[in-house]
Length: 333
Image 1 (cartoon, rainbow, N blue to C red):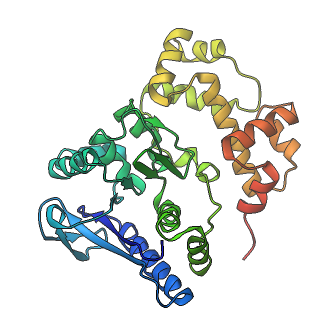
Image 2 (cartoon, rainbow, N blue to C red):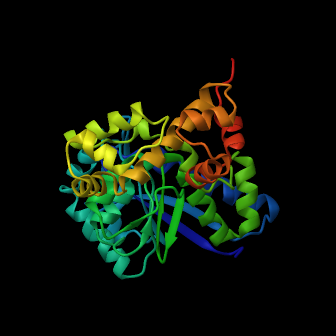
C-alpha cells in the first residue's frame, strides 16, 4: 500500500493523557519516514489530528498544556482513537461520563457509519458508555477491571489482554498498550515489514501480548463491603493452607449462598476462584522479592502439587514461574 494515505483522529477530552496523542503522532511520523527512506518515491502518508466533538477548541491535557483541536464534524478521518484520561478511580471516571453527551453522540454516529473506533487505556469507558462495545470482546486498564464490569455487564471483558479487536472496534489496556495498537495500524496501512522496522527504531516490544504479568491485585480498586473485606483478611491470613467455602462462610457469619452471591457481585468470581487468584498474587510477590525455591513459594501459598500450581500460575500470568522471576525480580543497583 505504498500510495496509501491514512489519518488517525484522536478525540480531544479534558485532562487527556498526552501519551494518547504523542505516541500516535510520533509513531506514524516515524513509520512514514522509514517508508520514505526505503522508497523515496513512496506515496504513503500517515497523519494524526486532534478533533473535538464541540467544535474547534483548546483541549486542556493532564499536564496543564493546551492543544488545539479541530472540529470533528468537518475533519475527515479514517479511524478515531479515544484517549485515556487522568482519574482517581473507577467512580471518578464513571462520574465524568455524564458530561460527555456530545462525545458519545459522535462515537455512535461514526460507529453507525462504519468508521473504525479504538480506545487507549481508560478511553474504553467512553466506548462502553456509547454502547459500541455491547456484546463485543474488549479490554481496558487492568486496575479498572471491577469498575468496568459493573458499569458495562454486556461487554465481554478480557482484561488480561493488551489489545482486543472485535469487528471495527479495538480496545487496549493500560497506557503504553497504545504502542501495540499503533503497530497494528501501521502494519494494516503500510505492511507488516514497515511495522517491524518502526518497532525496532522505537524499541517497542512487538511481541508483548498480555497485561497479565503486570496485574497487581494490591493496586486494584477493592470493594468496600464489610463482608468481603472480612473474608479477604481471613483468606490472606490463612492462605498457606487449604480453605473451603464453608469455613470462609462460617468465619464471616453468613451462609455459603450469601457468600457466593456477594463474591460474584464484588469480584465476578466464586470464593474459591478468588482464593486461587490470591495464591498467584502471593507467589508473584515472593518470586519478585525472595530467593525461595518455587517449591517453597508454592507451599507458602497453600499448594502441595507442583504441577497443578505451575499450571495455575501460567494460566494467570501467561508466564512460567521461572520466566516471571527472571523478568520481575528485584535487582541490586
